[in-house]
Image 1 (cartoon, rainbow, N blue to C red):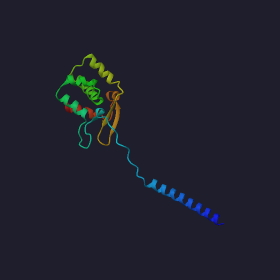
Image 2: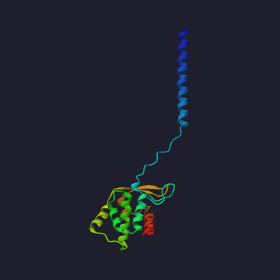
Image 3: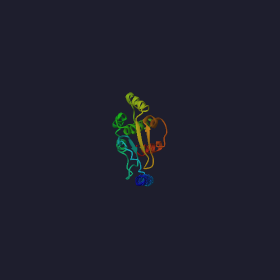
Image 4: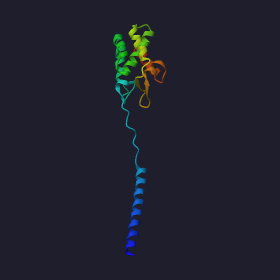
Length: 161
């Protein structure tokens, strides 16, 4: 009889502990704070932004191409249409197209062919529209269609030319 009592007592304790641990587990799950996802790692060479980061500064590719256009270094600008930095390639291609339309520069066949190649490129450009708006676009889309950033790029170009 005594043995049965001990077995029952052990079983009760065991069930009590299991229920208690399940209760604690449920409470822990409720108390856990969900962390935000890690920040996106952005390749600076692919970033086109006119007011980025806390300082609201231009991205490096925008600064570089802006300086080239302001100093009217059009031969250097033309070389950037084959840049291995996607954002510079995009901005240089965009600027060359606009400058060609205005009759400010002339492009040779190789340069025109490169622009056509860029218009078909699947290289991705990361557009920063401030802290709340950001989007990836293929170079081909940026050079052939209007996006929410098209007017921003046109405004930039009109200010620097």
